[in-house]
Length: 252
Image (cartoon, rainbow, N blue to C red; front, side, top):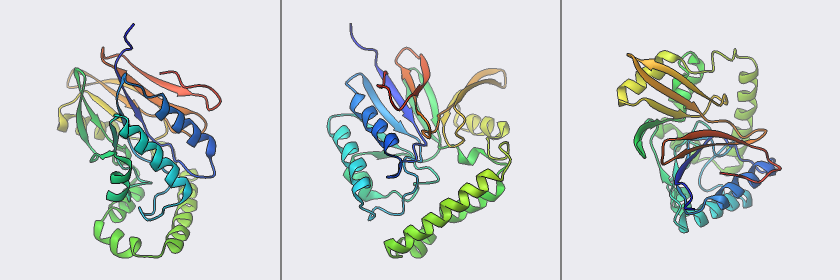
């Protein structure tokens, strides 16, 4: 029996050396991608923090080598930067063979048009974060005032920002950090799609609604803090958001 063809979507792995079980599960997922997998899409926050392509630690090298092996064996891997790893640059892409996508990328997913986003810009009530995002994504600022700094100093800044982010998350109402329906519908109408796939909010689920009387779906990818999470979309249009226990084999 010929395996069904499928496309995989993941996000918010937040890979870091201090969480080896998450890394092991991600590497297992890459190894599990056989010829039936048409593509793997990573929709941001693959890493807990990425402070520049020159941060060539053994941990980062392990991930880069695994991605390179997967793409070299014919697996197309698409990477859409998130709020934690938007500094990933040309060197990383060249060494891994991953293809970068812009936020708000429309793709043909078998017989469906789908819009891919990281998801942070959908959270329009989180005005403090959006102000920070606008500043931090300025290419002039993060080149002149961050990437030219020594690695040691960049690591120190990243650690301070991570602590600040954790404090902000704990002290901000959950509904503030979730998407707003009006923005979801606006961006879907803008791109002429009825399917939106994103991460960022760490609230996995499938949401059905209508836009001007037309059925629409928003699929939210899960974070990998306590278990793996992958959206499997097959050639027949069937889709399933799979939770993967870290101590179990991945079944796609």
